[in-house]
Amino acid sequence: MAATNGAATPLSRYGTRVPTVTPRLGRKPAPGATVASTTVPARPVVTPTATIHTMIVCLPDGLPSQALTATQLDRHFGVSGSLQPRFWAIPNMWLWQRRDLVAPRKGRPVSCAGGPVKLLDLAAMRHAAGVGAGIRHQLWQQVVHGTRPATPWPTLLARHLADPARYPRERAEADFHQQPRVNAMRMHNAASYGAAHLSPGELEMFQAGPMAYQHYSATTAVCGDALLTADGHQLAPASDALTHRVTYLEQAVRYLDTVEADQRLLAVVL
Image (cartoon, rainbow, N blue to C red; front, side, top):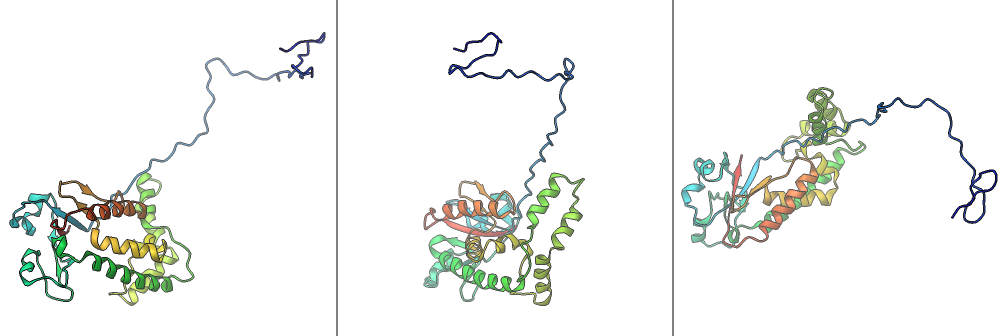
């Protein structure tokens, strides 16, 4: 308990004096007056819609074969597109098993639009896509050597959508294409378009490193850009940003790893 001496200076419990602080005289705020806040309102976070070119459809059991034609996709699955010979058939397939494949094509390996998982060589697809991605990333490193890391297009697009008036789309596109690393990729594509094409849309994936790019390409080869489960639930990335693509691929790979061997898959180009 604090005591006071004759000078009315308070003492602490240990007997030391506590100096009295005299309040400074100043202008008091008027009653009801509010102090203006200097806090800048946060910009809204806008997520651009993901680009979906290929969807993998898990066919429900008992679906008639007529539903596996392009004209019936919209009716049965709510998607408008055409079949894509994306999958590889297993090499040791019997001749009579080819009847279970959708739109098979001759070649090595045999490509088809889909079929039962047990007849699809998904492991070989992932391996081949990963090897090709490794070679492509080595080429990309040579093409962009000496340039600084660039801002991916989804980042600039999100900035534009958050404030279109102050950051119009034309400026966002100009900022993206004026980056030295993007120009290096575009110049390479102009000089050698074809199998050696380097997509500027995969800039963020390239910049993640060779192993990350290989895993991204390998899983995308099997999972596509979106997946429709057998019960009608759609898995898709929230945007084209790498973090959203990775989240989708995690979910899609986990789902495909748990399906039965008789589960039929179908690749559709939207």
